[in-house]
Length: 313
Image (cartoon, rainbow, N blue to C red; front, side, top):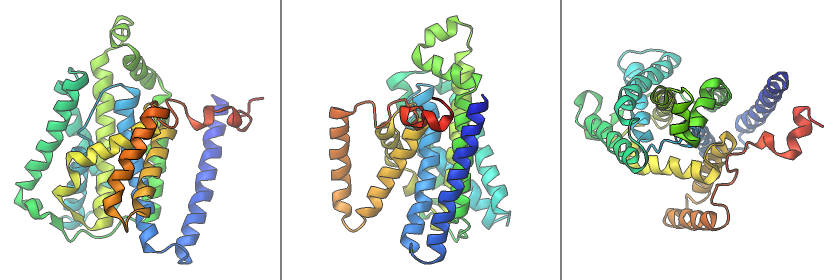
């Protein structure tokens, strides 16, 4: 346990050093506004992929409605900052609470399903959320919610991302996380051992939905508009690709998948017609040569090269 805490402290120190370097490059204009925006988007996508991995990778539930919860957070945050002039931090917290409550209410009936049925149900619910938003004139309807202030900076995105990653990492390493992994491995055996599978599945779904809401709030306050077209099922599918690329059941894999695909998208911004083709080629190669993803269900700190770093011999 002590070695884990020491490792956490080391990772936090390294993260702060990385942040200081990147912030210094931004302040000196070495990295321009284009790369600043993409660095923020990478942080947001890491939040989305890590939170989705808690549901899909660690608990073994196939959810395709993550963009719907992202939309709830985006519109909640926008309404609070624009119409009620609330501080950005309060908007982020409210986005988490709103998306988590709705996620929990949706999770209660849907988490009794499994496999393809659960995927279809969550996909449909994500689309229902988007269509409901499109028909609410108070939040702009189909035209979207405009005039959102640009509160999301690289510092906000980075530190919120760091908090979410450490929260989910500690959750997965707790008794709650072990129960989720037991459900993923064999739900019937987990029930036999006395684990209330419905409670743990709904809890994981609620936490994942809440952090998707936080990501939505950050997203709306960096592009200054919340538009229904940003939260389609294709967005959910994109986050699913990130965790499949990185590895289901690996936080490191989620971070790597979000980083690789978002960076690739930024590098190919001048050739948007090639982007999806290259995505497809990468996925085909991955299925042939690395079907478990870049990291599988292994964390970077579990690799032999990092044992000395963790204090091992």
